[in-house]
Length: 132
Length: 132
DNA sequence: AAGTGAATGTAATAACATCACCCATCAAAA
DNA sequence: TTTTGATGGGTGATGTTATTACATTCACTT
Ligand SMILES: [Zn+2]
Ligand SMILES: [Zn+2]
Ligand SMILES: [Zn+2]
Ligand SMILES: [Zn+2]
Image 1: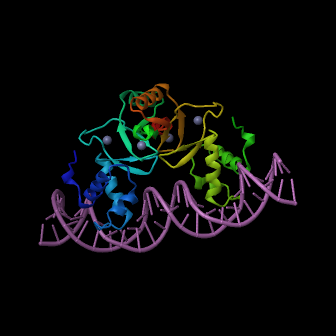
Image 2: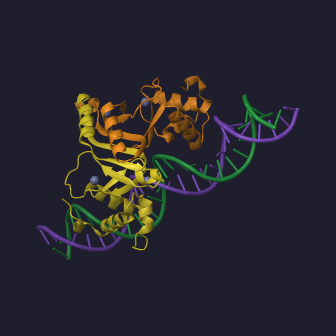
Image 3: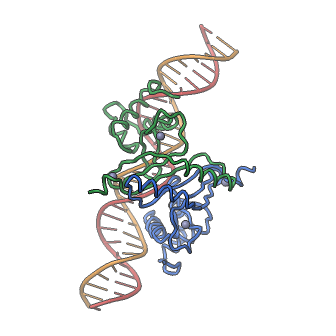
């Protein structure tokens, strides 16, 4: 397991910025917030994000081209994870469902599909945004 | 239900090109294939795709920024649909699973999340690509 | 004919992501 | 000690995906 203290300078900067942001952020948003810290090139951010995703500290939200910190960074291995993304406030909630995982793995088995990863993102309006 | 014969010229061109392609294609790939037909601007393709997606004739694959024709265009309403995307050959297979849908709708209910759509894309290697 | 809304044509720009190249550091191998 | 390889970093250029803005055309209605 990669610990936070093993992160390189740029990885730490990006991770801390994303954590502070508290919601999904694009690579360019992160870059904008890190100019003062000395970052000036998208590549610096993408490289850090690649590693953070590899370490499981950050997840990529494919349907909004954004990144978000893992809600359960202490789990060495998650199974398939899902996100509920609010189209009103931009927040995302990470969750997982063993039954969904089982069904997707089952479909893969049945169709001789060698599953490497799954993207499960539900879009809509979160509780906070629907009470209003 | 929108019938194929209701499509406008550009919509037909894009739909036919995508159908002929027989696999997911990016908007720019489609545009390249339609230069001879007179299309020259990405916007023309994106506008057509927007409508085709709205009509349910085409789906967007969020994790690969590509579009694919619906496998079941005669279903007036699909429920939540999923795709198995082969990272080797680029093919995508559309499927759906009522149990997965039920679980995602259940999670949404439980968390007061008003679900508008779901992105379910599994990535890996298809049967044809694993026998090799 | 004039008004309307949908579709289209087009240039420009925005947003997202990668490539190419070079340099620095550090540790293992020779 | 010197070499080598792996990893991280800085930077400019480029590639890819998507949208905005605005003018025009077309089919249809009044
Ligand atoms: Zn996580
Ligand atoms: Zn919300
Ligand atoms: Zn379909
Ligand atoms: Zn394949």
